[in-house]
Amino acid sequence: MRRILATTALLAAAVSLAGCTTSASDQSAPAVSEPGLSQPSVPGTSEEARVTDATAGQLLADDTRSVVTTGTVTVTADDPIAAASEAVRIVETAGGRVDARTENAPTENDNGSATLSLRIPSDSLGATLDGLKALGDAEHVAINAVDVTAQAQDLDARISALRASVDRLTALLATATDTKVLIDLETAISERQGNLESMEAQRRSLADQVDLSTIELSLISVTDAPLAQPDTFWDGLVAGWAAFTGFVGFLLVALGVLVPWLALAGVAALIALVVIRRRRAARAEPVDAA
Image (cartoon, rainbow, N blue to C red; front, side):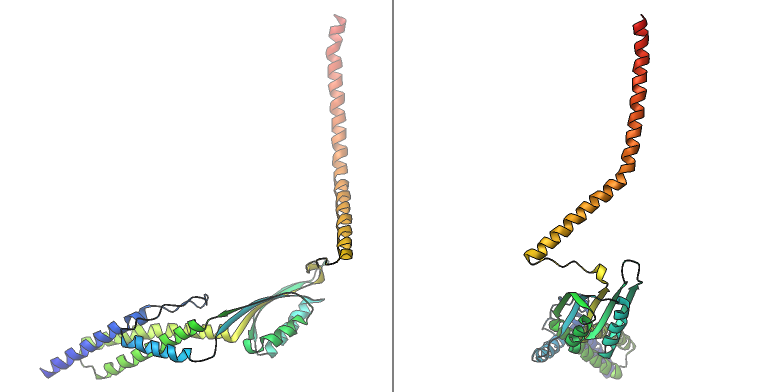
């Protein structure tokens, strides 16, 4: 009788724990590719919800912020290929890495170009950017920062709640003797362990985005650089004259291309005119004879 009562009590405890942890384990954490979104808080009716709220409150007391920084930089260099190698050296010296690198060989009209996807430690981002801009003339710099502190805290709280759940279920598993209770406990532990590992992977990915900023660097030659906008009357006059001479040159080139076709069209029109006149003259001769 005592064994039946003990087995019943263990089964009831396992079912109660499973009901308490369902809301925390079934909801997945927000995707790392969308740092602006966060999941709703876990309901506060269960013990795990209270653990989550307490952990979140402790994290909110921390002054640290988690920020994901991304950006694009365009630099005009005399030798983009050599500048790309120097950019790699600068980033690796700062403790970063190069995730992608694309180079276009020089041609007759330009000196080539290169595009690099750089991961730079956030603590040394400013100094590293200064070194990259010094490779040539910085034509474009855009930096974007997204605060993901709430998302990181939410993931940390959910991970703490799931770890506590797995520990309690593991403790019950060590004292369980009934086969069905053992199977139920092992199933619950396996499910929560899978959710825990998934959230831990998301947290590591988010931490990597926070620790290493992502910068897309484009190195181009002078011929590929955007034209500077005139800001004075003289610059505007020079730009206008250059545009006028360019337009006139374009018209002359177009005229040179069209001249052979116009000559061919004139010869064809002349032949057609001669044929039409001869036909008219041939039709008029019988009438005159009559």
